Image 1: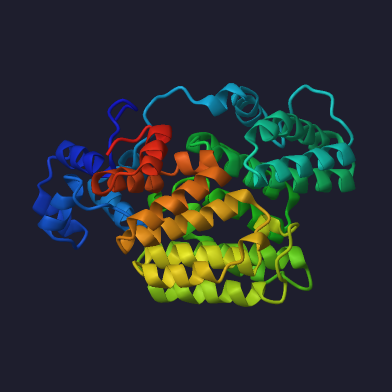
Image 2 (image 1 turned 120 degrees about the horizontal axis):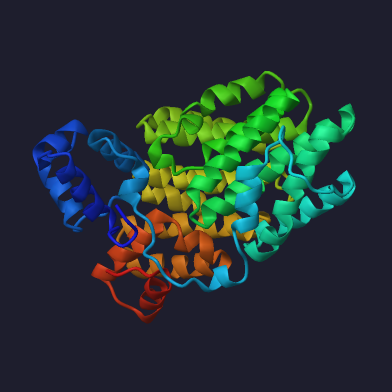
Length: 397
């Protein structure tokens, strides 16, 4: 399906089902749903709002979830005028931790400072700054891996895992560049293999787990419980190890939820909350692991479980100022919007989406479930705020 042909998720489901020569009754039966339910999905009268349903349909129709989620229609995007993906794409595809580019590397302290600058910019959804700093940092760290002494090589590999697995993968995912995000996640794994540290291997595994849409049931996400167990055996007194372990437990909770294991999801999320409580919220925490971010994840998990009231309860318990990232504050708003929409609180959903867009426009505009939600809201309600949001996202009701 080309970008021009990609429509709402229901339309994509119908196209995939017909391409398989499968009847509504057969397709619905494969995922344990009724023919009427699937018909309403395909005709746009019911929104596919849970990743588990999308994953089940993709499996039944033998397509990737990405093909059902579709891609944004082609458009002139003002944000792309300020930066280009070419340099980051080049360093991801044409260099590697064990195959460095032919460039002169700045000293490690300088590269560490540049990575901090990239981290801070990413927290504020400032992708122009990220794109200015990150490609050079990645390439030069690869040079250090090849040329530094043992201590310098280890430090360069740790910085590379952060650059690949956190900054690059997250940035590319927010920009809708999922194929490049997957490459970045694989580069993080290569760096972790060279380092040979189980905790940093877990950090790389987290980035890989979230490089693709979770509705695809990517193997890296579905094996998060095992990755968390592996890190758990090496936590000791390390705060960083606890943060990695906690984020992997949250990933494991999402994997369980997508598989319909609500009990397993709750158990993993509760374990993450228990680990986060004594750590508190710190702006320097890896992936911002702490009670506030755990609350955002629990709100999302409740939405996935079809419990919008519970989701809003978790969201209300989160102090947004404790989240040192506009992206995470935007994610909180998105989950509140999804929960309100499930409760038919359309006006509240639109308000939350507008707030999320102000915090992180690229993340909101490229989130397939948000795009589907906005398209659905356009069929149910009309307001200037909603029409403006739909126009900026190039979404039609």
